[in-house]
Length: 272
Image 1 (cartoon, rainbow, N blue to C red):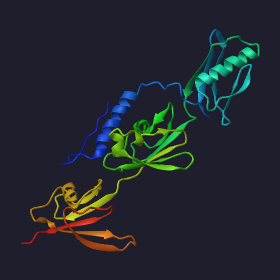
Image 2 (image 1 turned 135 degrees about the vertical axis):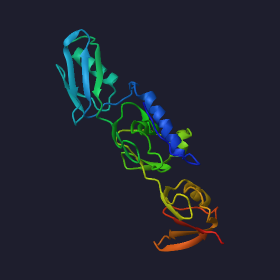
Image 3 (image 1 turned 180 degrees about the horizontal axis):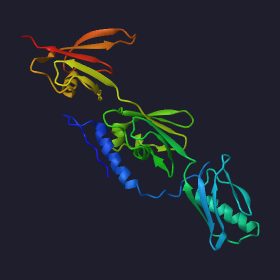
Image 4 (image 1 turned 60 degrees about the vertical axis):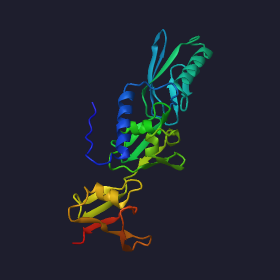
């Protein structure tokens, strides 16, 4: 049973909704069997049987070179084949060798090790996950427990096995945009970075560090900090911000001004 406490806020972060959706995916997929389009890879443990031949029951692991060794027929290339394709090859070779005619071969994967996806960064359970079916980004995020609420950024990076990269908008992913939910393959990596932060202090109820949400303004930053104290004034806000050269500058901003990563906001007292 899953339980999550969502902290009180005047605005529910979009990734909190994504987290809830991923939890639902986790529960619905917990008992799903992998479809037959899985491609075998090195390290997979196979359970092979031939109907009517008890002595042909074998457990064998796919070698690093992608092969298995099976009684009577010797070495068989298994990597990148489906279980159905491997069944057909074993059956044919048993028949061609004069051992068993029209052998009814069954291949089951006992342990999936050959095709793995890395899910890293701000997820509940970062690590490597076996690709047991044709999966998409959201499936792997679900397997990793989902993005960490209030810590994960709005965007993730999909790094392909060949080194190419693409940016994924997690808000659009949750909203059902299929362009943000591509199919993943063995050797790919999904990286969810930490969300940018800002700091607010002075005449606010809850000074401290907060997650910088998309298109955040000074007014919204003050709300995130619990609102103004009785002495505070939104008209007297200064922001310390580093420019492209790393030099710190102090700016006077109004409530509609945009906040940038690592801004330090100071809310002064109103004029008495």
